[in-house]
Image (cartoon, rainbow, N blue to C red; front, side, top):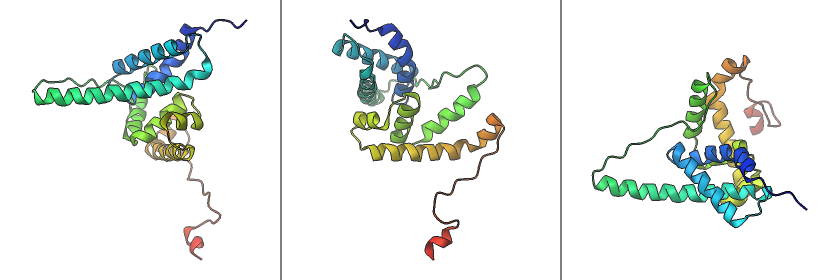
Length: 191
């Protein structure tokens, strides 16, 4: 007989990545934590016996709940703006950096925020969510090639933005870009 599913351990292992992902979709860390909690409740209700193979469904639930919440918040903000009610905007960091790494975390967070939303979503799911391109494609209803392209473009943009940190962090100079073309100079392609 199979051992019972350990919900607490699963939550402790997966929740930080889910919160980081949700944080990319909602306005505050508190909202992200609420979204993750709602997603876990949905998962538990749908699969009370638990199954770690269904963890990608948690990401899909987080995405759906976060987008619903964002739409709801947008409608509320618009309603309240019309009635002249002030709304404080919470601006907490998406990352929870180690002591002494707040500056680097804020630079990386800013670089992530500067990415287009679809690229930021793919990077977050791939790097922090440990999802495969297939899982991300299924979750977002996009082709795997679209997801892989968004990931590649996002990494290229992050590399450009963060190249100056490489030397500071690793003590290594930024390597020159790798030529993947079958010729050494662009002019050779034209001849």
